[in-house]
Length: 307
Image (cartoon, rainbow, N blue to C red; front, top):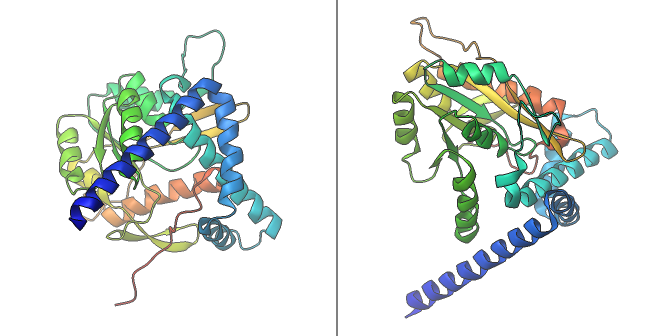
């Protein structure tokens, strides 16, 4: 009986949470992308300062910028909360917020850099890998790929709350290409099959991964997910980085790098640890350029005990 009651309460709680998330999305759509983005930034700033994640973010920024003043550290964290709030509010507008048209006479919200690398990746007839990070609105590269015909399967981590995960999945599935959840253990097999078929795989690589390889990030060792490096080694395909920079006036700039020259073993195969470090080094450059747009609240620097 207790188990049945728990399941019933869990289902009811999930239904309520789903209704709440859908209601917030409906409100965001009603007030438009600009005002909902501003509201999200304001609320995230106010609430974020009260959470334990704020202390984590402050500690992370201090470690990355030991010469920064307390005011400079606080400003970076405040900007990070604002960026997170804007990104959350913009979920309701992912179907319409990406308005890039290279032939348009008047620029929209989106501008693109490195489009020649995107076109080469799309049209070269080969499989490919794209890594990204939690910068700006990190959902936009997958939307760009879907809009302009780059067959891409994005590896994503669902939100912890199942109800919120369902709603977010609905939004993503309506605006992006293929999706592969990183939970459940089947992502590696699924995306390897995508590369076998000549498709493309994308993943955010800037979070802690318990079974990862040790790399240096922002001056400190951490564990990084080696999946993309392993896929690059096995399939020997080009690897690009993609990032989003949040500009003023509710605008964005998407950029894609040329293919990385990844380190290789003496036998000519891509070195997994070296490739993971090379991708992480690119992400570090992005973060240092726009630190207020990165997700500092995450416990990124966690290493297992020695031995």
